[in-house]
Image (cartoon, rainbow, N blue to C red; front, side, top):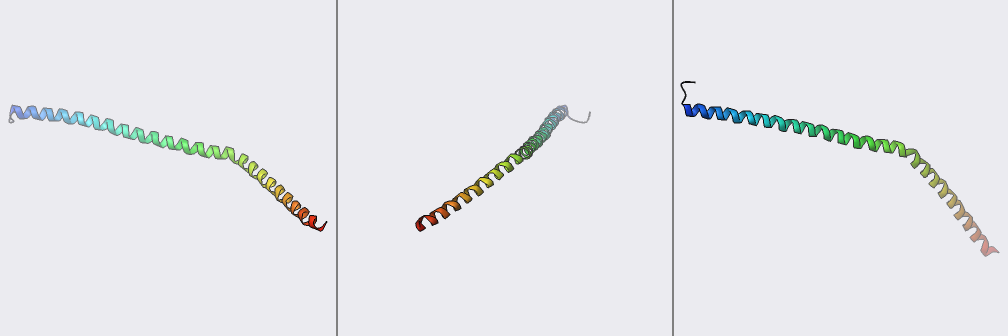
Length: 93
């Protein structure tokens, strides 16, 4: 290094120091990006798992409600048909 100008040597040392600092910052940023990706993956995994779990838990309830609605509707349809039969008989009386 004795061939270089002392000012140039000083500039090279500063450049090396700044490069090392930049490298450390880039590594920290990259770790942060990886951490956030992992957290986002876990976040969406939890959302999907909760959604599927809720569906699995609520599905029997929904089927019961649907069956009740179907039987209620069938009963109402039968009642309506009976009322129509009665209405058809009323003019004959």
